[in-house]
Image (cartoon, rainbow, N blue to C red):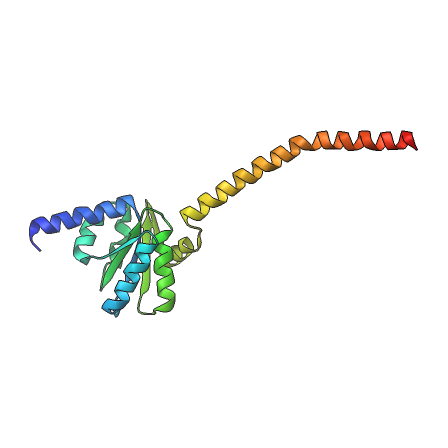
Length: 170
């Protein structure tokens, strides 16, 4: 890798940390097929993965809020990233359940730095699609309950009038 390629890589890594939620994990001991399985799971979740050179990653995060993660770049390290803050964390955590060779080191979400427990807590949150679906359900159920509340007084009055009519007839 020549100097220009290294410069491009540093810029690319810096942009990844600026624009995405990032999960750092140690991938020591993963076979090529296991790593490809992880890559496939991440893609299906809307996330990506890249093995990075530790020295270049440290340069890329220097002077940024994610600089605190530079200590984690040692040994075989990879980054999983996605625009959806939950997607990468959830996919890496699910893969780590079935493979003890993968260790979650930490992550970053904007200016927020996460340790391994923080990444696991992030993975437990609902995804963006799940949140949007719950918002839609809340809005539609609210609209139907409002319509029911508006229609209820009229039906109550009709019931009262019917009861009075029955009482007079009796």
